[in-house]
Image (tube, rainbow, N blue to C red; front, side):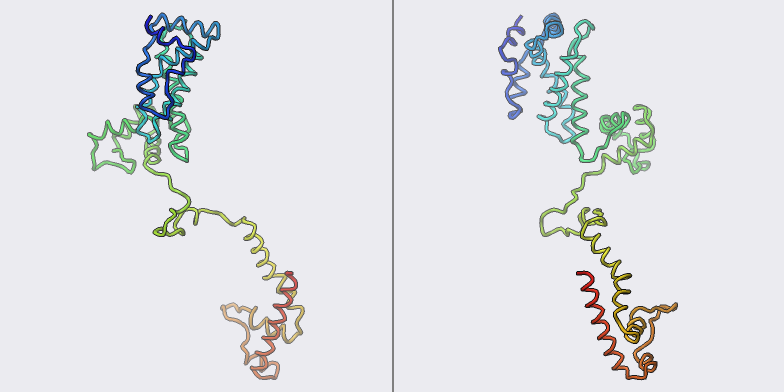
Length: 307
């Protein structure tokens, strides 16, 4: 047969150009004829019984056009068609490997499932950085919601449109047709309507970097330098102050405590310079001088303790 002659080559894949030129690839695979049923059966048996890789190559080559056709159904997801074709080809090869010629079906029917499965997995892995469909029900919604949305668009009642973009009646119809819960329909539509947001701000002068998600989503509580600073502040506020006060004489310590550390129940501080001057029988200026000297001594003690 003509198709067998066309596929009888030393390297079956040599007739197909690289995916680097997608148009040339599509033209090449469209020119490869499909196999007749008896040829397909004979090649499949050679592969199954004799592990004949030449037969496998001919079966794959004759169905590459099927992968191209199926890949066109998924270009709306914004992924390169060349990548979709590559993934579909992986599914086709898996189908050829598992194909049983005694089941009474053509390879084209059997391969549809494997080709679509690989393309679906690729889309789910790469369409968004964050996965939008992980369960079986979510995958069904992901790949059917868009077409159903276009189908219902002409019938939409704007007065009943919900935040999901569907009317209440449409949500019920989608849920019933796909055998999922109405709330699942709303959740998936909300996910699909959202977009990926870069954690870092764009590299230009027109954007405030403080508004980038990384600026307010980052949890730096356990960052080493912050942990060290936090321990340092805690030590200064407790043991450090106690140690520094212990280096002062009684009068200096009382002045510092009254002026800086004492807080009354009403929120006010301790004694004033004049109050302390009256208590110790000296001038307010002298109390201020003692306070300055005490604070200087405390700072020195704290510095030495930290070192």
